Amino acid sequence: MANDEHRLAEDRALRNTARAVLDTDVALLRDRLSPSNLKDRAADGIEAAKLRVSDTVSDITTNHRGAAAAGLTAVAAVTALFFGRKTIMQAFRGPPVDAAEEPENSLPQQIESDTE
Image (cartoon, rainbow, N blue to C red):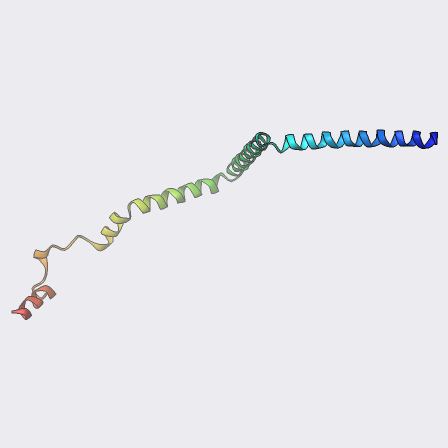
């Protein structure tokens, strides 16, 4: 019987120790999942990702300067064409035609003569 009481006391001590470990783990988990910690961890993750992307872009442009310059030149050319598109199209069409310079057999005159 003394042996059983001794074993019961050991089991209770083991149970209490396991419960204390579990309570500590739950408290740590709650602390890690608190909104302020989640916000801080997300901000740290975004900052780390930003630094990785910045380093990668820096390495690529250092190793491929010609391609980067060609890309920037292409972007500048497309931008210039976009903003100058009206002027360019006007150059291909030629000067605007005045009403005084229209030939005599133009369509508006024929319509006027048919209506009289």
